[in-house]
Length: 367
Image (cartoon, rainbow, N blue to C red; front, side, top):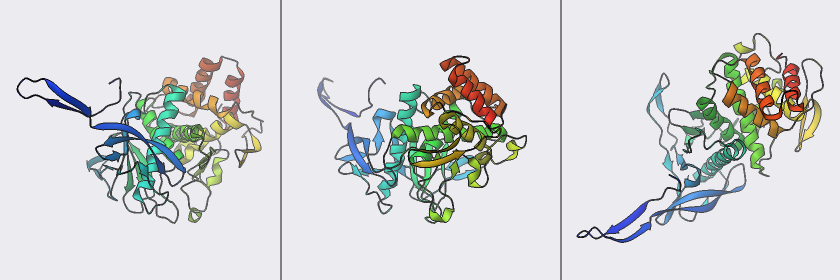
């Protein structure tokens, strides 16, 4: 379809077959929502009769539904029964209250996260949707009871968000979480990095890096861009200010700052630290500094001083490396080669950007 999908009602003369009248019964509309984490945000919705659906025809019919606190029934990664995704509806196209008391508030965050992720990939990288085919995904919020997770599932092409336990996590619908999880879908449709060993760390890092780029792209004053992962969803009981820290990944107590021959033995959320650290150094450089109101102090393995080239270039280099040069078995040495090739394509061999990529990898001990 070249236009926005609509439901067309046609009134026909039963005797002659002639069309008497026709009208659209579903129309797109612009509303707004009060989110939990991102303030009041615009929402493209679908009008159906006298109500509105939280469904966006301008972004591949992406929609957000209520999982009704139910969970999937799965065995060995095969799901026999899925939790519902009953599309949210609203009478006046003003969604949520910005509090968890209204179930639509989390839905606002989820839909907004989908919108910003869609727009980032389309406007920055020319990618039309997560799969590159113009088709929207869908979101399920309020999954399970006190569920401390969010995840992307290729088999349903959907995002799922828990409400958190309220002690360590709030609802996991923050913008960088949305960008992170949906970027797993992009990885699946491109390099398909195997989710174990060093390739698994690169898979996770890809979502951290590009999810962070989504947060910066959104330029939302209620959730400013930073190099922290999940800072909005963590509660004081979690004991840390964020899930992960790109400037010095070991601040989370588990992640690797630098490559070693054993890094592939770590959980993929921790081996990802090497690439996260690389991306931060490439964007902002080493040493102590304050960026957008957040203090960072990024060390290097070899004691070198790295000068950053800016996050926009980092996003373009990483995306091209992922979609053109990485494969399912790419390891850290292969990621160095892939990003150097991407930098050469974009900026030229021997360019400042090319040399910075090499220096940033060496600074995390990938040579």
